[in-house]
Image (cartoon, rainbow, N blue to C red; front, side):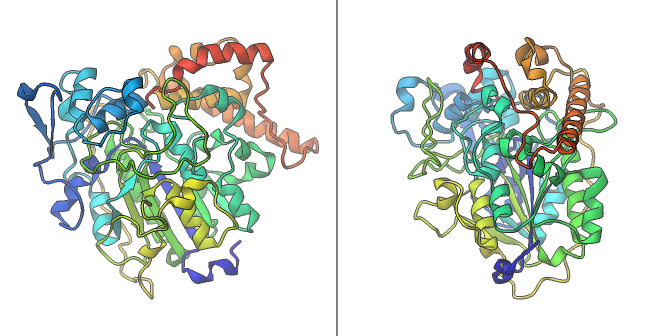
Amino acid sequence: METEATNHYPIKTLVILVQENRSFDHMLGWMKSLNPEIDGVTGTESNPISTTNPQSGRIFQSRESGYIQPDPGHSFQAVYQQVFGVPWAEESSSSPLSPTMEGFAEQAESVEAGLGKVVMSGFKPDDVPVYRDLVNEFAVCDRWFASVPASTQPNRLYVHSATSHGAIGNDTLKLILGYPQKTIFESLEESGFSFGIYYQYPPSTLFYRNLRKLKYVNKFHQFDVDFKRHCKEGELPNYVVVEQRFFDLKILPANDDHPSHDVSEGQKFVKEVYEALRSSPQWNEILFLVVYDEHGGFYDHVPTPIVDVPSPDGIVGPEPYNFKFDRLGVRVPAILISPWIERGTVLHGPSGPFPTSQYEHSSIAATVKKIFNLKEFLTKRDEWAGTFEGILSRTTPRPDCPETLPEPNQMRQDEANEEAKLTELQEELVQLGAVLKGDHKVSSYPDKLVENMKVSEGVEYVEIAFKKFRDDCEKARSEGKDDSYIVCDGDVTTAGWKAFAKKMFSCFVCDN
């Protein structure tokens, strides 16, 4: 599995866990009260209710966050207004503006009265005790930004491929065929390293076309069945992706932190993963990263980087936005965990490789390349992004890392609402399921398939779809198909593509 290329670093396994839709100030900003070196909040930070009316008053950052029911805006247009303090307009978007970070409250209030106070709230350290202890015991990065100033899907694509292949929102056409870019998974395989994806629902990494190949089917492991066993037996691969429960059920609540899901469930999930890793014989060779895909509409005071951010591949986003992928998204939480990290470390901005380099999701691929001495970068973005292997500053691993983390208190008082409509991300997972199942060829795909679907129905659908995908893969293997064969090859007629295009191009920038 590992080769001599890892000898320069003590790390042989990187574990990646990407949570949903929370900003740094919202989740970790108040950790500044525990460590003043953290660029967090003090309560003096604020946003105007109206950027055009000086008499409107301001909403100050509070420590009153808890269970959050509404889902704030985080579409491309919403993020533009939050960052620059003016609504997106085609004529203004091409003019250079400075990020003021003054539009969060106003944009939220335009969605729902009172939502401004919600997006300007943060958690007290004791309310997120798992993060409190991890920040105290290991390292927090207070300069990690989302890769795209947009929603979930494009940012999750950057995590493993350093590009979204032009997406700034849900692109159902590309979902059908699978996003075609090369990923870090193939780069690792080319150099003789291993990877594994531990899923709780059908894995979102199947949005990448290459991961649908027969040769990768055995890389997917059911989290509840295999993760702790692989930890205990020392069988974790070199690159580990842990995926969460994206659907909220009474018996199995969602643990991805996406509003309106209970953050305490996310805390339990991180605790479970950490404790399994900590008890593994591989612990002294592990670097565990917890990061968030994007800010979810929640306030952050640190200006978004807009200078000399390279387009990963020269692809321009869809009209009318024509985004050139030349600025980053809002700052998000990032916690780095390893026995090779000194207690209470704060990682600020990187020192290179370029003068304007930042930590963002492409930093994952860049760091993997460096640690494992991989052959090449994936895109110009991971070539530019800062790497975080320098956080491993000790000469020997710490023997005093905590074996367990605190048990968080439940925040939501009632049960999960299984009758709720699907969120945008859940709709995409159902649509992905339709591709795996072959239902993308029916007339109800994609809109009618999900428009009246409830959460409980979505769960059932995706589980059946993924089972069919696994069964079809086994059948294809028994028929002698080669390793590059893709079972769910999203073949659609020419007429079908035209019909899809007409319906879909209006849905590029939905909130996820």
